[in-house]
Length: 219
Ligand code: G6P
Ligand code: MG
Image (cartoon, rainbow, N blue to C red):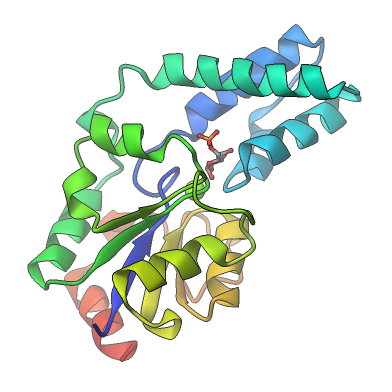
């Protein structure tokens, strides 16, 4: 197989960052400090455990192992309650168009996400069928910017790393793709995602000719 496409989930396919934010802010407030949208930027692409470490640093809170694990569970339970009612209306603009186009060309599509909630989210927004392979936070030992998640995805779709294209909204995710020697496409702000090979504000700006160029260029 010649080329493969790997999608991050949060911030690329669905805008779940706002729900992660609400859940982390609730925990911060319970622990007696504020947590802002700007601080939430640091949490994108970052594993749940690492996010809690950063959050506790922000609040100057030290935790016992028991408290730490309890807060992890609490945050996730709140997050799950926020995403419970998620449906297809929360798919980011033109994601389905791009997925459908790639599928029409018989190109293998994988998910490469740090989230342990990836499968239920794909189910809720009814996109599961597009993905031949799902590699998520349950399958990796090293978090982005380590390339592990994307390397496993490439292996599972049977495409060599340098022939894979990655869509990512997080700096850590772009770094992971670059380390894997994949083509990195930032979805978001070009001033933030400076090391990406290409950056688009969102998929509405990505036309078929660009996708064709990627498909042909990675060979
Ligand atoms: C994604 C999000 C992060 C989140 C991580 C783990 O990478 O961008 O903000 O912390 O997944 O998600 P989880 O659903 O397992 O808590
Ligand atoms: Mg993301």
